[in-house]
Each structure stands twice: as structure tokens, then as C-alpha cells.
Image (cartoon, rainbow, N blue to C red; front, side, top):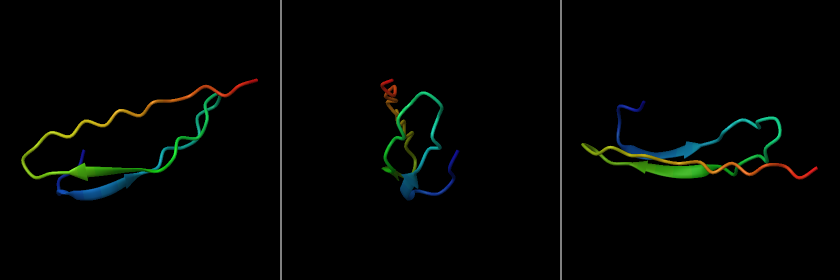
Length: 45
């Protein structure tokens, strides 16, 4: 949870069996709820 509005960068760790998601920028605005969905892609064997 964030307490300050602003532009944030989200870098997720590599999860076993999934491709590394790219770094994503998220803008959080004051007084608003921000939802961000990360779509994971399975690695091909």
C-alpha cells in the first residue's frame, strides 16, 4: 500500500515457471484507488 501520490516503478521477481515481467510504471493519484493487474506468461518448455 502506498501513502503518497506519484509515479512508481514496479519490478517483480522472477517466478518459477513464468517469464520475467518487464518493469512497469504506475501512476498513483491523490484521493483515488489505483488497481494494477500484472499478466504473467508461462515459460515454454
